[in-house]
Image (tube, rainbow, N blue to C red; front, side):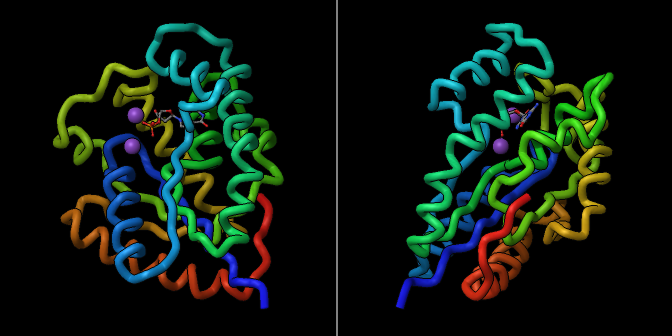
Length: 210
Ligand code: DGP
Ligand code: NA
Ligand code: NA
């Protein structure tokens, strides 16, 4: 009998909600329980496309807004063969940002509609679970200064948050809201519970498409 597929689990949220910390904790917990699991993150800055994106985020280069949107999407598409292979091998993938960040960040720029922004990612593997780490702008501010990268301003992050709220209305995606103002351990417990459910459910379902 073929092995059961892994689950595609995504963490989304505005900057400083704790996504990266929680992805790492989830991977550790699943490993300790003996489940095959790996972490991925987008943008993946290690590929040729990822290096263009990284230079743009670090403000070392300028790219036209539509162009950079398509590069972020291409960066996800170039990893699709690997994503599918890992899932088929029974490996659960915990992913730090995905297509939802793509749509939310670009549509927060003037002159972009959400539908145009979602289009390049249509057909990507659909996550079995997307957890959104909710953090108000006020709570985010308490976590310290923003960094120096592009997009790291409170005005832009508020616009991104609003776009995420629109995306979360899509009932075809398994969204789960997580209150990221709780302690790291409490957030982790909720994330682990949702993830175990998703892993069990995904075993018996084909991988979907966005
Ligand atoms: P991170 O490495 O998670 O801090 O992400 C880098 C920055 O890039 C962060 O501000 C969010 C933004 N970002 C992530 N994915 C996309 C995307 O697909 N499109 C756009 N425009 N921005 C993105
Ligand atoms: Na960042
Ligand atoms: Na992060």
